[in-house]
Length: 179
Image (cartoon, one colour):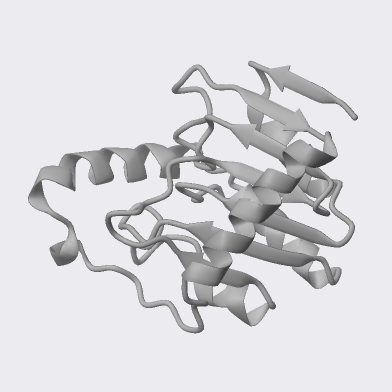
């Protein structure tokens, strides 16, 4: 039983946590736009590791050049979108139902270097069990996606245009070109 907290090198801690998975990765995150993290999830699926993701269905996650959610589904990934009015804000990643990583860091390239962030990992069984229960709850109340259609710019409220435009441009510039 252990716990750790880090304030630097956040993305590498996240990647390492996911890489350690042998049977399952369960994510509940506000945003996932980082192509390197996404590629690692696809790699885990190719190695018969179950991957379940709950995230927001908003323009940042689901515009025409966003991550290929249908490829994730086709690879065997389980995808659920949170509901309007009940959008996720927390970020946690369970590995093998034995370790949980909690973070302030959105899984976006925009977050990498733009904000002060933290990441905490825990293996204490009673603590981890609470996150397992939350993930079970989310999966039991949200429909499984089988085919995802990209959101259109016209669907974005005008007061969010600046946020999405700036965030997507910054995120695109910071993507690892190898992914």
